[in-house]
Amino acid sequence: MPKGTGFLGALYVYHRLLTHGVKGFQKCEHGGHEPVYPPRVDRSRPASLKELREEAEVLNTREGAYQVKWFFTQKDKRLRALELNVEESEDPCEVYFSDYRAVDGRQLPHVMQVYHGDTLYGTFEITGFEPTARK
Image (cartoon, rainbow, N blue to C red; front, side, top):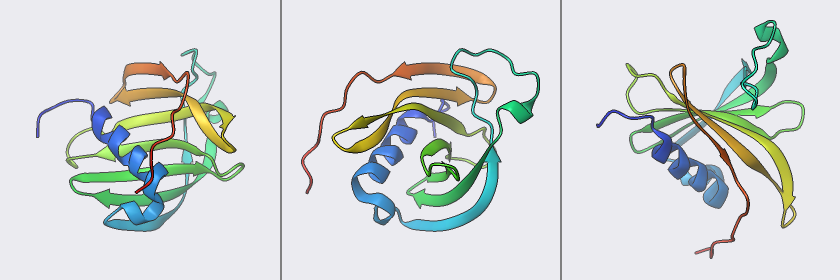
C-alpha cells in the first residue's frame, strides 16, 4: 500500500455509511463507549484535554483493507469522528466532523478536519450536497 493520509479511503467508507448504512460493510460491530477528543476548528489549544472530551459510542467496521472506528456522540448521536486504518503499524487517518446543518431533512456536517498522525492534512468546508441516485 502506498503511504499517505488515507483520506480517499475515509471518503469512500463515509460514502458507504451514508448510502448503505451498516449493510455496506463486510464486518460491523458495536465497539462500546470511548471518549473522543475532536480538535477545535480554529486550531486554538485548550487549557486541558478535558475541554475537548466528548463521550461517544463506537462502531467498528471493516470493508476490504479498511478498518474503521466510528465515534457517535452519546449526547446527540451525530458522527463526530472516524479513524481509518489500512495497516495496524501505521497511524490512522482521523476525520473530525462538525458544523451540522439540516439538508433535505437530514443533519449533515459542513466541516471536516483531516489529521494523519499529529499533522493537520486539511480543513474542508462543505458548501453544498447533491443527492445521488439510489440503486
